[in-house]
Length: 220
Length: 220
DNA sequence: GCAATAGTGTCTTTCAGACACTATATC
DNA sequence: GATATAGTGTCTGAAAGACACTATTGC
Image (cartoon, rainbow over all chains, first blue to last red; front, top):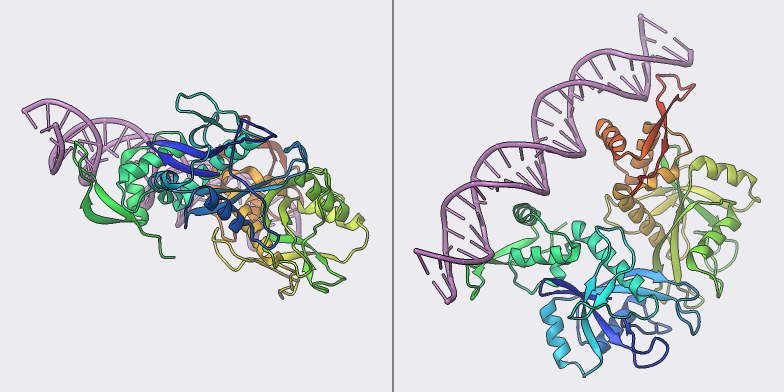
């Protein structure tokens, strides 16, 4: 489940299936694990084949094993989710071989961290038909990402190298699906010591430019 | 990973391996998934075979798939963790067939939710030798349980039907590995609306008896 | 009465939300 | 100068920690 925040919205990479089963539906990228291959490496390899992306954040999500989830035979999927900054992903998609893939908006029909299936929509806002139990997997990824947001610096994985605090807040809001308090957000992020001011300002923004920051992982 | 809190300490059910590999080491209960069996059902079945326990809390934990984790062949384990009140487990162990199993103390060499392997010790406090990567699995279970503690009513799964707030706090402390503030703990639990006073008091305690409460899941 | 723990009241600290205000780019 | 957003200062309210105090059982 490759997620990103693009233009203030949470998006997911989907592939258009050309073969049965679930032909013409949209699916999360997937593949088989090599007999001597670690699970996370397999997830990275699958993504690498679709979009050439080294060094992205990958985390194991959940293992889906319902006997009926694939009509062909018993398939157990160790789902992972990955995060990548939108600018990096866009650049990668432009150089990738022309494949029937899309970066779809994620529509989450529940609030907070309650969980449940999620939908993907096209640019017009119409739901895409997802293959197999991929709506459940997508929902689980969003739930996990929302949970990580509070206690883990995952949001920085979605930022370019230098970013403004407003950009970071916008990513938080896209993920959590709720607005955040500007003052409190700034105070909290700055107090966390996880960002370092560069002293430089953004340019060409038509209003007072914000300072650019970099992510600096906390030492302990 | 069957965990419980017994006598104020976090404990785990371990089986003594009688056969190679890892002979004479201690292992978490495990087994193979049936070809048409859901994953969580398999976990429940395995536990049921060891200790007859209906209706216990089971949650998928993490899937361990390192190619070298079992010396015989590639084995991928979808680890689950389960919670059971100590009194229920003790009663069940007494009626179970005499098997080489133990309820070992869990020793967590890290603080908070940092994660990492955990150890199991005998009553004298000496570490037991754990089979395969089961120290990693145990550590992951403790990490997850500590994480659940704050935002999820899992601690009630470890309580008998009626319990005092002090017992509940003791379980929290055993799991988190850190003392809690009594006043704040009481306020928080009572304010959560997840416990219902019974009006009855504990008896034969040699000091002022505490009121007994029951768990009442929050409505929404 | 003594020991031990249950349970309550209050003060302080911390932190998030709300709001108002000043600052500084582009146009 | 207008506009829009960046960034700061201050008040308030919620919740946790600290501490002191009262309550109630068995012995």
